[in-house]
Image (cartoon, rainbow, N blue to C red):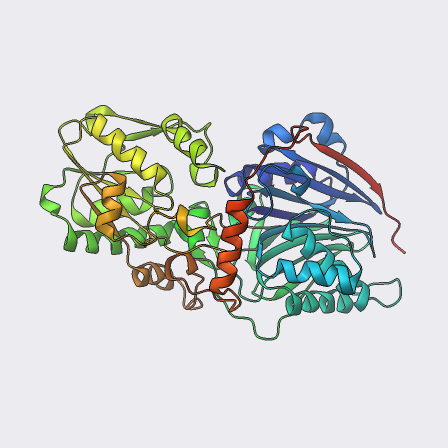
Length: 507
């Protein structure tokens, strides 16, 4: 999971990109980067940390140009501490290309071999995003008319990417001297939306992982980029769009609605907030069937993602809703922190209890999901320490039993608390008196009720069904072995930020 932005404006875009990345910060806390284009020159700055820490005034001044892309990184492939893998990525041949990618390729190793043996292109990092960049560069070279590109050849190159690449990818690309390209994998696993803003000088375009970036920056949402579709905005601010996949299928990642996206976003035409309310309604019915509702004194959410579900659950069951945890907003999202010890420590720093909401009460805690169980276990302990008589636990999502290979950091079954355990055993592991999970069909229904376009989803972390059709048990064993055998290490230089000024002559 990462956040991407692309902007074509009538004035400098550096501040727009910075502000947009701040809004998408929840999608990645590991690294951030911005690349802009001024004529045939790219300017790039990227480095480790949060957006506010990576970019200083001097860095922003060094990012001129009216067209650019931005990226916030949450590592899912490669090393979490190798900041050579911060994005955007750049390649100078054939036309000068800068790329930002959200997702994860599942055939990276095959593509790396093809790059070396057939395409004669060098891959410098372990990042699948660099592989994707070089595949696109090769396809652009093959589709170009000599040393010139046109719209047809750009879309032909994207079609070539779809034929070769497997997995999840939402992509923004700057092509030196030509414009801004964006495209989405044929299943639409990771989200991508675009909007416009009318100015006296002309129409401006913004492409983003989530609609919330468009809202906050004053752009009007036009629509989502379709699965398999590519859109291209040229330097004359003309928008071109084309379906580049042969058999696209709408199958967005359902975990975006559960946890990843901000509640004020609309993804593939569906309000994330409204979806989470529906999750609460369906979860309430299962709680009614499985827990002694008359014995529950209060419903308390685990901030922040579970609040809509917890509120709707409490209202449906007629149980008081209370805020029992206060969140320190200067601590990042614990789910996307690398390392179990880091996550465990951060839970206590992130949340503190309001004692009077627990003391002498039987509480039902509601969370959006349970992944590793680290946060849940710590929270149950905190509730008991605050005086709760009984602690019930409800998850607005089903049990996470399988690795996610499409861009969420759930790569090993051993890290998932639900793998190989019953609900009762999981309740014992986290210390709860009882545990209720959402049903998978109820979760899907929560989204389907709000859109007649969405019937299929990537729910692989819940049901083990990998929609790209190329994920085998052997593949899962390989990535698990690679992760267990390759511990992540910090770079010796501390991951210093990188500033680049590259003169690219478009031929």
